[in-house]
Image (cartoon, rainbow, N blue to C red; front, side):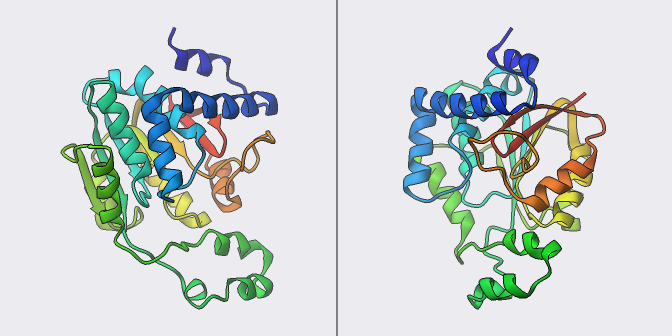
Length: 264
């Protein structure tokens, strides 16, 4: 039995276990030199978000399962500066394997009017409560060419882009989904638009593209998950995930605000 299989066999969504997994995965990230070096660089250069523990989560999923499959295919929705896609490529390289990676993102800032005009606090005071988390979930990223940023982190770690397909646009865009709807992925990581409607649409559209025994990993989705050691994400995302129903999937692991589902 692999280490991943042991975690999945023993997993139950209780506070003590969620906290233990988060803290142990954080330590395990630092025990593997290339995971530590990658996460250190990301933190020192403000190249991404998420928890340090996620690096070890991805390492386990890829090492113990996904990279052992024939022609593995991975999809990330919402790339920002490329922390996750570069990590996938880095893990593959160190394990002397490869995977076809697709990266969907607008690769540019899409600040809404209230963020551009520095009146977010004023908006939060006047907007009705049900919509406040949608405002908090809006993109507040600075204006820059994020595709250049992705390529910079690949260069920093001497990674090839040969197996990467970049799709510029939003996951809800018809032309993006049209490019992907006939494909089957071993891993889909959803970290795109955080408004309830965006997450719900991504779940409907992209969950069907996960192959048998494949993984659907959802970021910022643990608001109702027990535990006290980790940040739990956004209410809008968590609500969309909780209401999704996960038909045909099982929630096999939670690592901080990342929830891991596997297709039956």
